[in-house]
Image (cartoon, rainbow, N blue to C red; front, side, top):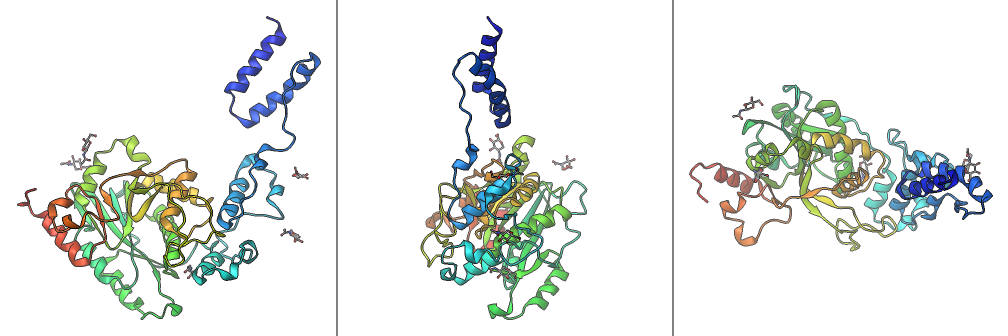
Length: 398
Ligand SMILES: *[C@@H]1O[C@H](CO)[C@@H](O)[C@H](O)[C@H]1NC(C)=O
Ligand SMILES: *[C@@H]1O[C@H](CO)[C@@H](O)[C@H](O)[C@H]1NC(C)=O
Ligand SMILES: *[C@@H]1O[C@H](CO)[C@@H](O)[C@H](O)[C@H]1NC(C)=O
Ligand SMILES: *[C@@H]1O[C@H](CO)[C@@H](O)[C@H](O)[C@H]1NC(C)=O
Ligand SMILES: *[C@@H]1O[C@H](CO)[C@@H](O)[C@H](O)[C@H]1NC(C)=O
């Protein structure tokens, strides 16, 4: 076999096996001259960079994400094709997103909470008002499970019901459990009574409130998630597992702990379980709180776990925090988490014990129906305590 043929064979193998873009490009440019000299088929070298074939999307979120993806990708080191003087938003600077008004078609026609969201979209840092600094410091290798519950200022009864039932801190089943509530603030434009002083008393008494100085609204829940991940990094970096959920759910903590303790190290590493929603997309009914205008987001959502409650590993939380920097803020928090997971090449795992859409009506009053359930949404504070006590009863026979 001649040297040239061997070269050709080698080259074909490279074509088939090689998957590195840079590698291929180098091979093609090296071999071209040799091939043409011997009148062989000349490989076609693309004249334009092939990645430009996917043109810039038109919907606002998709377009900004498209730009971010390219901005942070070292393959596209020459950013000039991103148009103008594009730089990724500086999320630390917290400047009003002035570009939004020109970037979104018919910006002025968006619902007001949407315009609000978009204008403050690049703001991810807010001062912390209430903290629980010693929360994780008692155990050098972190608590086993930390409950992080989204709450609002006025929900005193829901928080107390959780403290007295499934969210009890201490050692359960030989595993340490800790609890924090995540809060923003009411602002004058919310026309709510000022409960801040009461909240400070509550924080002093229980030491489990994390509060930041941003307006606590549905569209700011993603912000709450990000601020919590930052807090986690500095205050609770060794936690094994996190439960993140609403303050109107019932959790069967015993079952959750048994499930988590049963996992192998590799299963635990990238754990993200919940009530996974597949093939969903934006709601286009303007009357629904999940409404997303077509000008803002286009296409489907990645798989995500319903925000009523999901469990993920502490190790994954750190990776999600990193990934979130390169994901354009999306106003629906659980979808945003799905986007961050997708960015990491992961997807959440469905667990049939997470019932964010509740169990069958006829079973709701039967204690035994809750034995194999990790989470149910939604329950009143009184129901939460009643259920918890009934499940703790050693005489319970199912
Ligand atoms: C970046 O790409 C543009 C358009 O392809 C080109 O005009 C410019 O010279 C490139 N800049 C650098 C630094 O490579
Ligand atoms: C880019 O920057 C120059 C000078 O700062 C400015 O005149 C121009 O309008 C900018 N272009 C875009 C698209 O923002
Ligand atoms: C409880 O946990 C400790 C420390 O992880 C361990 O040494 C002990 O064996 C456990 N006890 C039981 C009953 O599992
Ligand atoms: C989120 O919080 C910030 C800071 O308080 C506020 O300016 C903004 O309007 C809030 N966004 C929404 C959509 O409520
Ligand atoms: C523990 O793992 C075993 C084997 O995978 C499984 O059969 C069992 O149901 C698990 N227990 C719990 C509480 O998840």
